[in-house]
Length: 502
Ligand SMILES: Cc1cc2nc3c(=O)[nH]c(=O)nc-3n(C[C@H](O)[C@H](O)[C@H](O)COP(=O)(O)OP(=O)(O)OC[C@H]3O[C@@H](n4cnc5c(N)ncnc54)[C@H](O)[C@@H]3O)c2cc1C
Image (cartoon, rainbow, N blue to C red; front, side, top):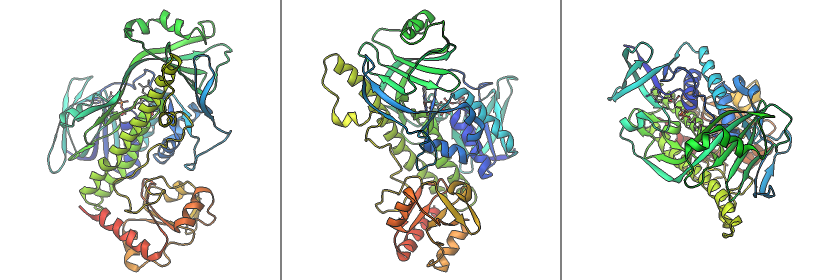
């Protein structure tokens, strides 16, 4: 039996993106999904800028970009439609990552496109209608029992690492004995996707209606689609809410069967949950198997894509002997607190909707702290703050390096295109100047890029003016920054011992 580097259980968004990144890194991988096709019910619709950047680096963004549209803004309104808080994006606005703040998409189409990209890689296989029914790990790897649901036959597969990308009910998490607990949000919402067939004037902003009678969300989607989400009241059941007559009654304020058709209407329980750890030996939990996020900020799938980006380069480093097994511990150390913070942020946004609805019923105004979790509020989305990061204080550490025009010797272009998936030492002038032969040799042995930013501007100018040099990880997270060659040497030495330890 041949041993794959990576076996992936579940080829939803997290598993399919993981399989593509394995392809990019040259890891041999096999992904299984128990269903014959992608899950076709309405789920994710919003994708943040950093995630678009990750997907571009996984070489899948272009495959679904024509089926997306840019979100032009978002607001909280009262039951009468009066704005409480909100934000509009200037036309053509992009963040320091180089992408619009949020792109709207359709999850089943996205999943199909990402899966189709796997045909590029001979070393990556996808098997649909294959259910993983048992896993067992030892010092060398993980054994999987896989049942072909079409033929009923079972086969054994062996891999060095297993990624549990099998969703919130994760069989991998349960069979690895990893605990799972609530972070305090559980409410039922009816989610309705509608195709507009007539000329209907709807807001182009993502809108949270803080209506005490029924908190409601509206979002424009690509291809004349629109999303509504209606919070269920006490005593309302899934069956009654999914009834088409009831759905039309809820939609009547905006659309009727004369100008729209219902594509799907499903009641979901919006959960906030987290796994106790994202790693048990050779088993690593990714995506909803590790954390479940209520969708008020469109962060659930995005968090899964961030997991993948954080993890796959580390597996590649360990496989190539560039780092010890301890590097994989940093996956859970880094991603779990960030996922918890993201879930908590989303929960606060959900609670703010309820608090404004409560205020309309005569309750108190939401606290100033909670109000910052509205769209356009000052509460910052979390970034990495633990793990493989330089032990110094800087606003840049743990964040993605700004996208900018760079040069590596004669090659020039955008940071991500020129650097690719490797360590980078970044400065306004060639960072090799002032580096000891030993330090230079270390970075060369890791295949690091020595990157010059000839004309820094925007956030990159601010970074280099403050610190002169940045050390960037293969997932484009700033590992550390420095203002002096001596400090840089210390920084690099520390990275060396961490990256090579274990
Ligand atoms: C209404 C709603 C709106 C949302 N909006 C957003 C949004 O705007 N933005 C956002 O980022 N996220 C959003 N989300 C969240 C997003 O849909 C999920 O986070 C995402 O689907 C999780 O991806 P995943 O790959 O981790 O898991 P899943 O999508 O659940 O995929 C798991 C896969 O594993 C397979 N599987 C399970 N067990 C096995 C097994 N034993 N063997 C083989 N295969 C197996 C399943 O068939 C499935 O394909 C939303 C969710 C909902 C419900």
